[in-house]
Amino acid sequence: MLTNCQINNFKLNRQIGSGAYGLVFHAVDVITENEYAIKAVVKNPAAGATPEIKRSTMLQTQLYYYFKSFQNRLFLPSIDLDSIRGLSEEQLERAPHFREIAMQLRVHAHPNVVTVHQVLESPLATFLVMDYYSRDLFTSIVDDQHFAGSGQLVKKVFLQLCSVLQHCHARGVYHCDIKPENILLDAEDNALLCDFGLSTLAERLPANACVGSSYYMAPERISCPSSVQAAGAADDAGAASAPALFPTMAGDVWSLGVILINLTCIRNPWLKAHQLEDNTFGYFVRDPHVLFKILPVSQQLFDILMDILRLNPAERAPLSEIMDRVADCTSFTTSGPLSKVEPLSQYERQQFLITQKGLSIRQMLHHFHTDDESYKHVSPEEDETEFTSEDECYRQLSSVDTTPTGSVDVDQTSRAKRSNDAVLPSEFKVRYLTTNMSTITNYSSHSRWLPQY
Ligand SMILES: Nc1ncnc2c1ncn2[C@@H]1O[C@H](COP(=O)(O)OP(=O)(O)OP(=O)(O)O)[C@@H](O)[C@H]1O
Image 1 (cartoon, rainbow, N blue to C red):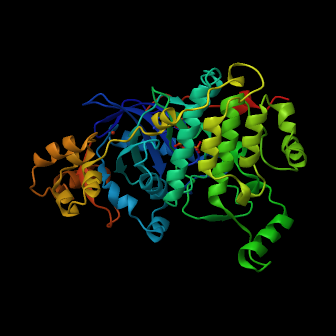
Image 2: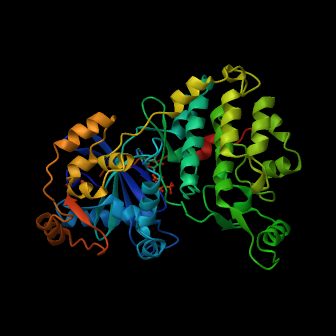
Image 3: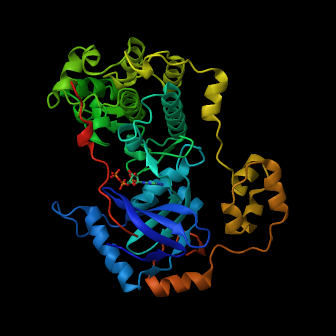
């Protein structure tokens, strides 16, 4: 158990999540008292892990001894976010622990992606400092029944998810692990996408690639029959011998379909989209109308779902069309508060989607086509500042000290090296040294949420 641990100015309070590749902690900035979530991403996931010992358990133990050896106080250098965002595929192969962060940064201008503030480097793990959200979509749907009474709320969150996925796909980033646990909610019920740990730039994935979480995984990822694979291969490459590849984007769309069922029916339709291993899915493949028997879906919702949950990934509806149909839907369920819902006006729809993330100086400069060189003289503190208006940005810009601060705070970086032996890849710019564990909560269990029929 990590207690009284601090990394730079971030005091780690408790562990709030653990997954295959990392641990997430709630932290507070001791100076500003702002709350953050800090994800520790394992640098060498294979080291020491055995089938019996989970990687996250390994990391917990390693982190415990690491902190202990520095009297629970780490001073870590922060890596320039643009340097990570710009890493090539080849560089990411050499430093795989940066892949998740690079993917998130590529799409992170969208208001429905969790904001990354800093990336802190240590020999053991990379620490991702993000905005903290106290609720996720899973607990909100299941424990709080937050969506059970409001069709507008269902629409808001669902449209935001479609919008953020459109943004990711347009930038060539495919999330591949869309599930309620990876969607956080702010106080105004805006959805924030996190955990880009399985995301990829690959436009197509081989059949049965098995990427994602079973409840939400598309059938071509887990149960693609060899006849379909052969047909796919023939379509793709004109050669039946080539492995079948399926559009990665369509896998994210399938997961969204399952989330729409979660939001409206508070159920999962099946354990996994595998015809032989899951009876319900087997029935669904033979006759999709089985959904009427196992879920309280209205005819309208059924029709929408039929266009999302298509077995052939190439036939799944585009996100823009799904958004229109969900916005216009007047009934999600056969009974209860969601049996009658108001169609969204154009204004309401825009309201749900326009919450713009504050722009940094760099983004503003791009926006105004200003010479990017001037950015190099902006101090990190200035760059982290978010602006909500162009005027505010210019006011701040005119007061910026234009003395180059340089990319490296040598004094502080060398201190970090001395104290923690942090070795940074040479291609990264260490911009400045900032100053950053916990009760373990057993995180969400799906056992309470099995299909009921
Ligand atoms: N910014 C955040 N604010 C609050 N909680 C967060 C934040 N980021 C992650 N979490 C919580 O920590 C959990 C684990 O985070 P994340 O999914 O990023 O890690 P992971 O190692 O990839 O986990 P998994 O293997 O289960 O997908 C999330 O499900 C979420 O509940």
